Image (cartoon, rainbow, N blue to C red; front, side, top):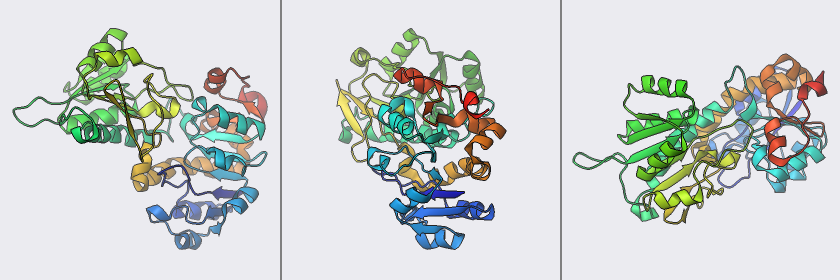
Amino acid sequence: MIVGCPKEIKVHEYRVGITPSNVHEYKEAGHIVYVEHDAGSTIGFSDEEYHRAGAKIVDKAKLFKESEMIIKVKEPIESEYSYFRENQTLFTYLHLAADRKLTDMLLDKKINSVAYETIKIKNILPCLAPMSSIAGRLAVIESAKYIQKTFGGNGMLLSGIPGTPKGKITIIGAGVVGLNAAQLAMGIGADVTILDIDVARLAYVDQMFDMRIHTLFSSRANLLASIKEADAVIGAVLIPGAKAPKLVKKDDLGIMKTGAILTDVAIDQGGCFETSKPTTHDNPVFDIDGILHYCVANMPGSVAKTATLALTDSTLNFGLNIAKYGLKEAAIKDIGILEGINTYNGKCTYKGVSDAFGIEYTDIKDLIK
C-alpha cells in the first residue's frame, strides 16, 4: 500500500503522524511511504532522516493524489478537503460529532475514515489514552499559568505556600484525563476534588491517591458546590465519538469566584462547558462574566515531540494492519479497527456521529461482511 503522511497545518500543530522509525517499519513490511516536505522538521525529524528511513519526500498534491491511506494527527481542515479523493482511507483523530462540515466531506467523497479516538479494545481507547494523559497534565499547568493576575485570573498560586490557602482545583471526570490532572494537581500541592458518575471509579481514585484528594459523585448539587469554591475547574468528560455533555451552564458562572478559570479538555468533542468555544495556542483564553476559559483544541500540540512519540507508539500497529490487509480485512481481523471506523463508502458508521447530526447510521458490520 502507498501510505502518505502530510504536514499538519492547524495553528501551532507541530505533531506528525509518522516518525522516521515508523517509516522503517512500513518499509520493512513492503509498503511505500510518502512524507510531505518538512512534515516533522519543527520537532527535529528532518527530511533527510525520513529519506534515510526509506520515505519518499514529496509535495502535498502528489502525496494526496497517489496515497491510498493518509495518516495524520489532527482532523483535516477546510483548506485540505480538496486534496482528498474517493475511497481513500484516512487514519487520524477526527472528533466528527463536533464537526458537521468534515463529516459531510468524508461522506460525500466516500472517504473511509478511522478515528484514533474511537478505536476501542475491551473498553480501553489505546490511541486516545496517550494524548489524554498529556492533556490532563497540561490542563493543570495551563490553569496554573492563566489564573495568574497578569492574564486576568484571580492571582491564586494553586500550590499555595506555607501559611497561605492552597488553590482549589475541581476536576470533572475521573477517566484518563482526570486521573492525570489529579496526579499533577496533587503533586503541586493543590486542594483537589474529582467528580464522576461511576462510584467504582471514585473508589479506585480514593485508593490510588490514599484518600488525599476529595471524591464526589457527580450530581448536579455536588458539581455546583464544587465549582463555587474552585479556583480552577478542569472539564475531563468523555463520551467516545459523541458530543460532550454541557455540565457547567452559563448561569453557573455567576456562583463562581471572579477570576477563576475553566479549562475544557473536552473541547474537541464540543466542550463540556456551555460557554466554551475552541481557541488556539495563539490566543488561548477568553473571559465570560469574569470567568476565564481555556479551550485550546490541540493542547498536546504544545509538547509536540513527546506527543508525537507517544501517539505513534499507539497507532503504528493499527496502521500496519490496515496497510497489510486493506481496511475491510483489517477490520474483520481486528475489533479495535472495526470500532474505529466512522465513515465507510459514503455511510456514517458511528452511532455517536449519526446522533449528533441526525443522519442515517449504518452498522459497519453490515458493510464489510
